[in-house]
Image (cartoon, rainbow, N blue to C red; front, side):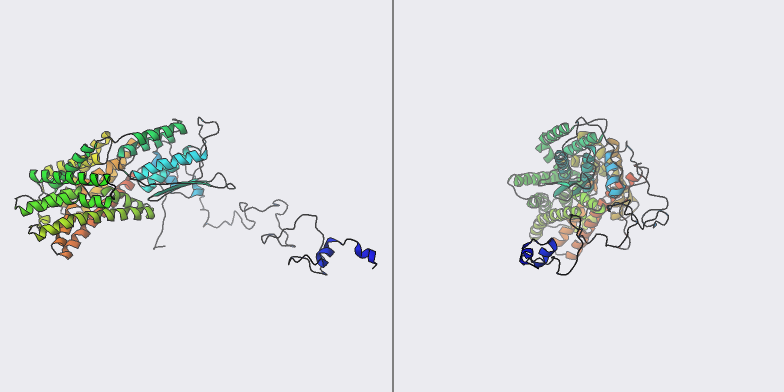
Length: 552
């Protein structure tokens, strides 16, 4: 080969073989003949079809898709594990059912089986912006969760708001302090996620009922509530004051403690003493709250005045039931609302939220124990004669106890800042609860745990039915009604036995108090679930729930 020919530019293969500057390990080795392509980059994916493998569907499906039917699939030989022989039933929700049940039905279904969203004409031409809908949803969920609503009902409300404004593929997530919601516009677009932290809680069932009415109007296709109107109503809820002033709450706390003392055998003197102790504890708790002290210490201080008054009666040898004074004060402090919500979250599968709520209940209970036990210990040391055996001598006074239970439920409703229209219903529900409990416990001589569970089940059943009749939350109809069933006397006598160095007997009494509290929570939840079984939600049957057997 001549020198002129050597100066000629070589081909691409030759340059790739002899050029010393190309050091890539993917370069074509010398002597390997490779056919020239059409100029396009070769497919190097490990998922590419190997050369020589002919596809039967190459002409009809040039590009494979994960959503195409596999070539090995046959409709005649379909495995029964994936599709039932009768097919997958189509679910259609009843439009006149409460939105809580409709949304709860959908949340408990797999995503692939949820009915498609029906387009609803809104006042906006192109619909509201996705971030604003998610923000409104989170704000509504924050008010519900901060007000003590269960995690499942909060998720149902959030899902209802998003679905009403046209965001179908939404997944809300609720924990004890964090709310988040994710919306995926389509299968090929990135999801949009927003979150909000619940930093402050407050009991105001009037505001809770207003939020439920707002969600009901948003989900109503005939209302056509715009996003701006929903924001305006939400702002009004936040600005509105509580329905009852502070002095009314203090008086209600005293009335609750006095009525509870009558339930366990107290008279007029005991009623007044228990009321004074509870009101003094309430004022001290308000003082500590104004100084920024955590709720743990507020409960500890609030539990001391009723116990101190009871010890003072015992030291003065006054012929009154000192144990009823202390028990009445405990009724005003026991966190029944948080206990019911925590157990309800656990029974519905929200275990993280349930654990956090029950941990909060435990802290409050420990605070009450510290406050009462400190006073009782010093009372026993200075010679106070307090008798734990008095727990066995509670007199049965049916008419007076039923009236006291109704007063207790009424004052409890005021403390929960309920609407005045719901106070009468919850008062009657509380009277029914104590009537059933008294008939089972004192007349039929059934164990207190079983009697409490049955009475609490009726509270949950009637409360859920009243809530569905009003299209509202069930909490205002159930929480105050379980007040007469709270284990105040078992808690007090357990603490008194521990203060008198009878630890074994005290622990047994405290275990009974825990059992009664769990019976209340489970009974309320079971009654609510039984009431939902009678509701007609959809044509595919009742609500589906997770099914696991043998622990896996």
